[in-house]
Image (tube, rainbow, N blue to C red; front, side, top):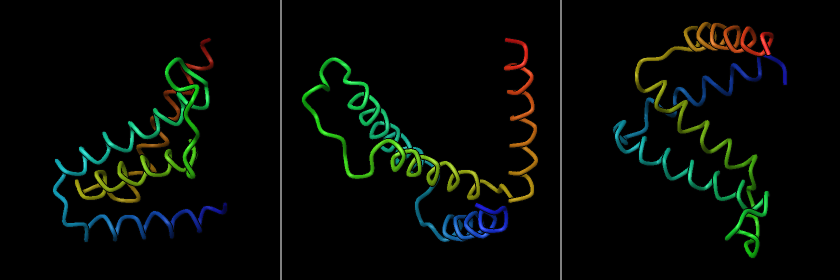
Length: 104
């Protein structure tokens, strides 16, 4: 996906986040819910004990990852984050992660 398309999507997410009436506490509860759904999908995919009899959901792991990201972005943008700051912070955190990986 070209960078411009991603920027447009993130701008849409930002605008929706700023219009969302849920306070940050409710968004965090939603994040916990979505994280649980993601964990469930991973357990099913890995055929973890207690999950072998379950079927994956329609969204699967990738769809649940998107749900988690949407809620995280919502918290980020509603807390005053900007697209420019997001890019800067992601670059800095990715660089730090890269240095860690390089040291392995």
